[in-house]
Amino acid sequence: PIVTESTSEAEAKNNPRATADDVYTQIIFPDLEKAATLLADYSAPDAYTPSLGLVYGLMARAYLDRGTAGNDAEAYKKAAEYARKAITTSGCSPLTQDQWEDPINGFNNAGANNAWIWGIPITSDNVANLMNFQAHMGNEESWGYGHSVGRACDRALYNSIDIKDFRKHSWLDPDRTAYAYKSCRPDGAKYFASLKDLVNIKFRPAKGVYNDYKVGGTTDIVRMRVEEMYLIEAEATAYSNLPAAQQLLNAFMKYRITDGSYDCSDRTATLETFLNELILQKRIEFWGEGIIMFDLKRLNHSMTRGYKGTN
Image (cartoon, rainbow, N blue to C red; front, side, top):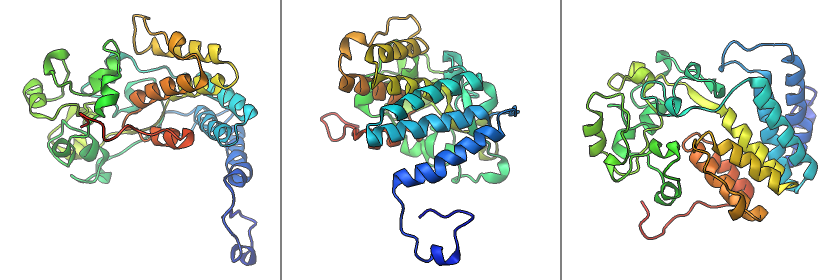
């Protein structure tokens, strides 16, 4: 139901569910447009504070959703436009390999990189040994569920990652000698050998403190990275100009396969094959960040499950 400041008590008593189109038209877009006006001359002091770049990023997400819902060329155009505005206005840049693999600040500290457009700060008052993000997602900490459960990458997804793509180092290869994995633990190599194959080491305990949940559990939680805007721009562009979209994806992937050898052009000759490739890269990029499920539902894609050799 749509409820606004002007909704009367009588109207509220007979207020059926609205359509998604109505919610976007009457609530979401007007609110975002108002936010953009109010934040136009404001400079956010950190990534925890709403900014104009964040508003543009939310606009890009919203218009991409509307484009898919209605096969709306104008919505796709606006999604690409606002994604580019988010990149430019935020002043953010994609994570480097050192930042991605940082055993102390990896995916836990909004102030340790220039990629986060928006994040949630967590303090020691907000954590218990089982009630924090790291306790469930991490594998290096000595508290919580993470290291016992072993949150892992899907084997088929892992095998699809180029060996030269440094994002592959977010998960422990069955051959632990395949890469010199970094750890916040002094017994890192020995400890990693005791974990299950393909478990993630993407999300590190705060400050690298693996043995004290009051410190290590106070990880910032990422809600929007600038990398998402590059991929929204590429997808939204593909519906009207596939060659341009291929070049946008190729350009983005230089941040991940840094020798420049990535080129999707020959194997993404159709919109369908391009979307498959883009969503693959998006699954790799944002694993565990709570983004990709919306894309899979939006595009009616599925995760591969139940195949021979699955983990």
